Each structure stands twice: as C-alpha cells, then as structure tokens.
Length: 282
Image (cartoon, rainbow, N blue to C red; front, side, top):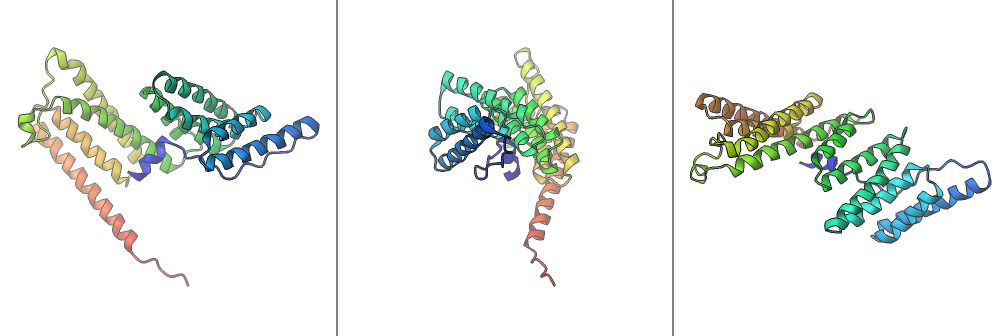
C-alpha cells in the first residue's frame, strides 16, 4: 500500500528555493530579493516545526512576489497544516481559504511540472478533507492525466480511486450482512430486493462498476501492479455478495480466487527478484 499513499498528499520538500530571475532595476529587484529572503526564512522556520511563524514569512513572500507560484505554494502548505488542527466551521473555513491559495499557485505554475503537480495534489487533498468526494476524484484524475504525470503516478492515482469505490461497495454490503451466515460464508448473498434498500443496492452496483473501471485503467498503465489486482479480486467478491443465482456466485468466487492467486504469485516473484544479489560491475 506504500505507493497509494503517495497520491493523497504531495510532500513539499522545503529545502531549496528556486533561483529567481533578477529584475532589471530598482524596486522590482529589491522586492525579488526581499521575497526570496522571506521564503528562505520561512523554510527554516517550517523545518523547525514553527509553522505559524513560517506562515507569516510565506505570506510576506506572496506580497513581494505575487506572480511567483512557489511563494503561494509554500504559503498554502503552511496554511494547510494550520487548518487541519481546527474543528467544525473553523476547519472548513480554513480549508476553503487554503484552497484559494493553492488555486492561485496553480494558475501561476504553468511550465513548471513540479509546482503544478504539487498544487493540484494539495487541491485534491483539501476536497478530500472537506468530504467532497466528487471534486476529490475530479482533481485527482486531472493530476493523473496531466502531461506532467509519470506512469507510476497514473497507476497509483487510478488505484486510489478504485479503492474508494471498493470501500463504498463494501460499507454498504457489510450493513446488509446476515450475522447468522457470516460464520460460514463471509460472501453470502445480501438481500437488498425490497423498497427501503433499493437506493443502497443501486449505489453498491454503481460503486462496483466504477471501481472496476479504475482498476482496469491502473492495470492498463502497469499490468503487474499487484495491489490493484488484489482489489480487482475484492470487487469480484462484492459482485458475489450482490448475486443471488448460485451459478453466478460460484463464477465470481472462482474469478476472485484466480486473481488473488495471480497477484500473490506476482508479489512472490518480485520479492524473489529483489532478494537476488546484484551483479558486480566489471
């Protein structure tokens, strides 16, 4: 699961500040120098865990250099740490203010893949914090489909979305589990064929379908992505839970087991390859 965690948050390395191009003269040059100094001071404070002070320096940097994406990105990162420590309406308000800062960074980041990717990742994570799953997914996909995106990022992104759709299906089918049957068959049929449960049934079926869609998108990028394969098997288990006809239930069960075995064999193969001694160079 290590790779999937890279999707939700873009770790901003607060170490080296970009080399800012010199303004040709006077006031513009002075502001650029002061802005760069504010960024450097903010980085030092941020790395010392003094986030509130760092935030003020990053804010000053945006005043001196309002057209530099990096200043807005660092300011947003510090704001992000602050709002996460709040609760209720204050947390929501802080998240929305931070969102506007990252959107400003994104607007100014054209041509710089690293800044653009970081800003997009932060925007997606804020929508996740706000519980706005559709917008989280929209921005997460936007990040994956961008020309700056690597193959690994595409695969892990589609995996992350597939996992959320599986969780959606699993949460609902768990609610409708028959406790008496769970001891002998964890994947027994979930009866949702009555009026009060119909909306939940539709939701489960939609989540399974969308989950499979993103599983296939991830595997199209990386056919040997074992974690995705495991979730493909788990989605077949959700299909099994939603199926009443015994023959179809057995078909989904067999497919789930086949995929799990294939994924396990792939993991073992990779582990064995990693354990092989590295050939010595000549």
